[in-house]
Length: 346
Image (tube, rainbow, N blue to C red; front, side, top):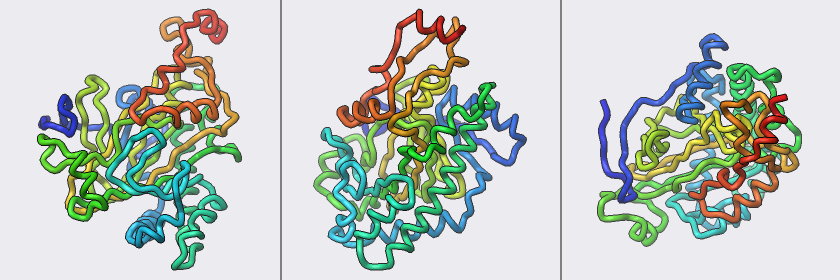
């Protein structure tokens, strides 16, 4: 059954539809085929039986909620976001805002501890160790998924993607997003500005965007809000049904570039409508700053010529921070060089 309703943007529609779901306990070759299909068609899939212990997830969620429940002055000791640290409402440096507060950190234990220790109160080792455990598990999961994708694509080196994340200089991030409930919004004035006559109480938690990294692994509590853009119509948004026992995985810009456009970096957003707060815990699998990102030679064919010019992650990251959240960054790196395509296919 498909239901259609208005969404916060005047020209947008919300369509309830089934999305790909993958069980990691299935046979590996089947998982690989379905994963490739999901990444080609949606750039997104739900993952169950993922192997990350429920206890690890539950304890991080509990500590994260305890952190966001603290007085603003205490949370702000882990900020301001530049771009890492604690932030509230302001997203990036170019005027984007959202109805959320967040903690954005480099995904390694020393970096996590350096930020968390400034908060004060309880022993910072508790929160930083739990978050470090969560990062270890989700990083391993992301790398496993990237290797299965490599197998599903038939790459000669199945580690072509994952080795960029396992690199000791990886720029991977962990992000905790807290979307206050409708009643407990931390700034009702912003709510009034963001609310339109048609939205009937719906608020933008995090605006439309694609993720610039390779792969995003997200887990949220049982409160809904995530929506992905339909691959067939940019004005249609598909709500993602919450499932706290699952992870939600989406393709990022770098993986779209490395697959020469075969995988799709899905555009998505977070909507706030619930009477309860929503918490999402996100691992962004990212290469090192020096990594040169370009389409793999196996992904370039006569039928699918070279689409993107090479760039370093540092170059892309710098450009990303100069643009608005909804910008289509990868368009700036498109290539029309046929000679380069022929060289890669030799």
